[in-house]
Image (cartoon, rainbow, N blue to C red; front, side, top):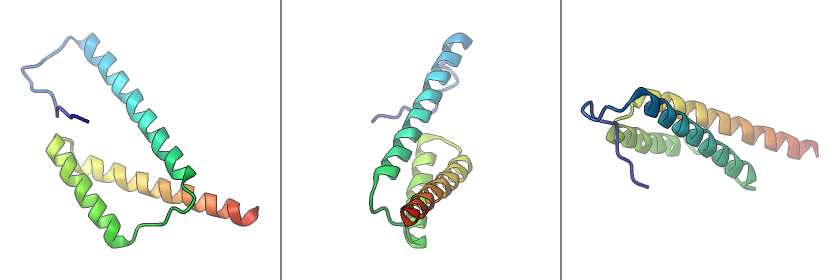
Amino acid sequence: MMHEGPPRSDQSQPLESLSGGLEAIDLQILSLLSQRFGLAASTTAQRELSDDERKAQMTVIRRRAFELGIPVGLVTDFWDRLMDAADAVQAQRSHRAIDD
């Protein structure tokens, strides 16, 4: 997948095309999140990451965010919440399996 990075200020576009483009990207983000959670939910033996593995994963994510020109703090906060949500889904699945 090729990433172009943030647009340069000399590449301005009409507001209408920007809002349509942003909406399309937002919908892609939601679709990708849905795919990610679906994949995680279908994994039968998903294990929790150790603290060291999670730190290593975050290092890769932060570095990539920086390379793409995305605010690293935003990505870090988002990823922390994403991991917390994934852990909660996994805990809920485990709880359901025990109850069944």
